[in-house]
Length: 297
Image (cartoon, rainbow, N blue to C red; front, side):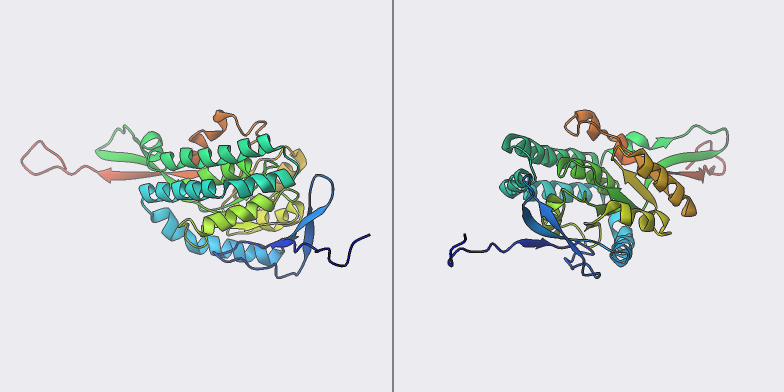
């Protein structure tokens, strides 16, 4: 029996992150986040179709500025996210423990996420040099192939609540794309806490938007939306992947599958994750001859 002076804890309501703001879901729907023993530890927004539209609109608006930024500047911002995450490391460890992880596993997950951000920060100004080419052609032209961001990308977060989330988000934004992250339904605390980190880490408004809720409910709306350019799915659910591919045919958006068994494996942080979310643009430029000379410019 509770005593009269027993205090009832005020549970945090984790809001959505859209366009640099933390709105409540317009639907007014919520669900409970539970700890490993089934006790309620927080409230989470159950995002709606309108929330998805708002997130896509914010991501599209932010795309032009973000994709045109200097690669070095994008690297600085990813490094800043890692710095801010490092400063709040204890909070993330506590949230991971509350969701059922041991303290050692939670620390490994958090440190791994910080290190992965730094890894991709270093790739921001290097992948173009590695994957762009000057092509040999049998005509009087220069021919260049360069990487360009796909655009607005939806990321279905994996079950790994922090490291997996960072591992799909970092290569997406490192390559100049903007993102809508659909957090894992039952391990979403770190996703919104990461949004708080992003909000104070120089990330421009709308570059990253994070929604919580039922992934299966949100999937059809996102897959069929004409203003989404690509979808990344990292979960081991063949039926979900098949449905995504069918519904994505409406505007021929890319559906990329990154099935990962161990998010701590360094093979996960390949620069090819960046190029998976790039289009290759080829440009032809004529070589003009200077009259009376054998040189060209």
